View (spheres, helix red, strand yellow):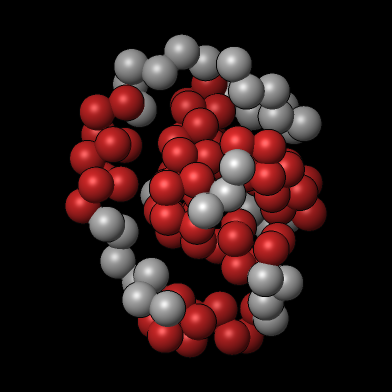
Amino acid sequence: MINFSFQTDEDTVRLFQIVIWCLKKYLFHTNDSAVEAINSYYEKNVKIHDDDFYHHEMVFRVAVRIHYFEVLKGEANKFNHWIKESDYNSSPREAIDYFNTFYKKMPS
């Protein structure tokens, strides 16, 4: 079981568990580095993003956002350009399928 450093509802915990999978699969994080990046991003942005934001963005886009800001230390005004340039603008089919398969089945 993953223990995040922040409190949130069960659905958002499930979503972030899948974000960990995306960070590991597509952005070459370890489990520990993924959790650390999520914790840091969430805590820094708690006043900017509510949990609905993460659900609206979906898991791959959240993973990419967290990687960009927490690992690459990218500038906010260059985020959209970086996503397009890096070919991360669309969620991979595998990430969508993984989300659809495991989101409701994962224990919190």
